[in-house]
Length: 133
Image (cartoon, one colour):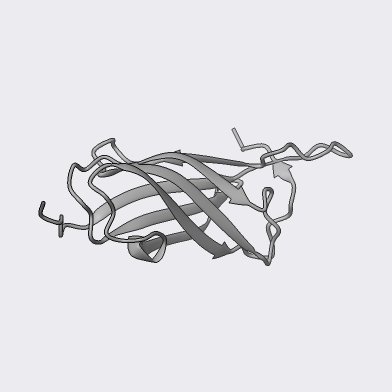
């Protein structure tokens, strides 16, 4: 079977949201995410887990992505576009080499795990803030 030499591109937006609740305990997850792809991508993202969650400003955060390859052909190379937003403001927009986040080549089909680590700017407090309407 031939290896797909075209670059696979997956777009993922991780939104760091917070909820201001004086004295209230933090919920179990302070992060939401969504795929910004149009459904034609060779990789489908199913879930994103953030560690720690909520993030701690000035420290690294690991984004563990559960995904599936749906291309029908092995993927030898590719890129991931990562957008990280906090309270609507973009704090990171990066194009990351797919093979730096998982083992390449990827199989023609089936589950994969992608791990991406980013240093979160120190101005991100470990609380939740509601989105601005």
